Image (cartoon, rainbow, N blue to C red):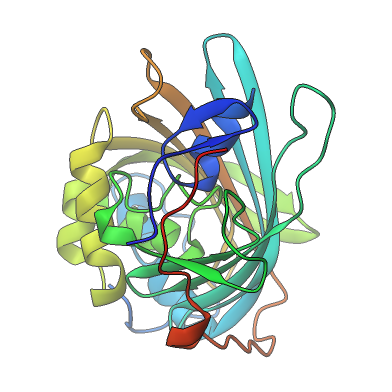
Length: 278
């Protein structure tokens, strides 16, 4: 398969966008009522666990992502923007890597998210410009919660199926929308058991690959129970760092119901060769 370790701008890293940057420096369910209970006390857990179902009811949205990574005193941020279809579990993101130490910027990487797979274009490292790299997300030690440089929006929501010890923080605004802020911890193993077919294997891989299966989060839900913002904090070892990499992944969702057209690459458009070391 095309996924191999490679050297990119002088840094050997594990395959995946997030690792590059560090080296360089229940699917369907019932809807919610018109008004969302503020979820104080034990009800907060159930309110948060229903967030993925509310996104399925919303059909689709635009998304902005931000992934901040810190290791060895170095901090980098990867940003993405695109659209996602929560019923088909497919999306398209344009991901921007940070500048390298010389101040040069990389071309944006186009990512297509699909059940069980991540497709990347402009991947670099010897991949022809017109070809896609395909990666099985269940084969990644983090289940593609981190490696792609952006957490799959629906996987981020289904991770909340493992929510526990959730507390109500308060009423706030995100992107002009009134939201309820909750804080808690999600267990990846429990989330994997309850997730849809498209997310189950990826979350199970992450439960094994992360430094801990417990993932702290902050989530902001609107009055229909939809996620407007969710922030997860992960800790993992990418194979090239002695210390764990701390990652804060933030996903913003807005413009619900927008049309989403995602055409996955044909077999002939997928690069099957070895990714070169530069």
